[in-house]
Amino acid sequence: PTTQVTEPEIEPTEDPFMNAYHKQDPASDDTLYILGDVIDRNGDGGVAMLRWMMNQPNVEFILGNHEAMLLSCSFLFDEVTDESIDHLNFQQMQLLLQWMQNGSQPTMAALRKLKQNSPEAMTDLLDYLRDAPLYAAVSAGGRDFLLVHSGLQNFSTEKKLSDYTPDELLWNRPSPDDHYFTDVITVFGHTPTGYMFGEKGKMFRSDTWIDIDTGASGGGSPMLLRLDDLKAFYCE
Image: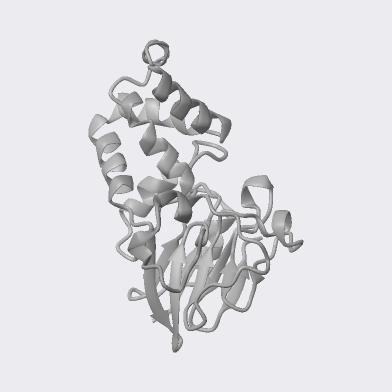
């Protein structure tokens, strides 16, 4: 079956990513892997997208650093109000400040609304994020792949994947000459290709890894990468 990965910037009801996804007409045994950072963007901050993903049996979500920041601020979600923010300790304030500096406002507003309208749905969403893995190993088209949000910081062939810290998988910024596994293609997002590699709006491929972050959060086009043949589909 066809396996695709993407790092989308979308609203499920009206967005080029959803149009492109359905245009590919995925089969029932295809799998769509989403490499994190669904939230903290435009519109409702990605909350509707997360809820759509939760109900798709063929969608697998890899945790991104933005979702990790949300989870680090889970102390807010019992009572997401201005008053609760006024009573945070220093460590909580630091975590919240980091998330706010990375675009939390639309997501927090949507979560407040969701909790008010459906506390059970809010709980389910947080549980979904807590259960999300940091990486996935898959095979397609005769190749082996490692799917992870940001690449592999402090990479070593002697290092087990389970030995990487969350930060090494969530916050890494690779350089073009970084080399990973020679027998496994590592696919990640997080670092916009135009920012680091001069490939604005297009994926960047080295000899051992592929960066698929096309800068959607800054107005670029989201993309799908079909792992069977490494064909890229850019969402217009």
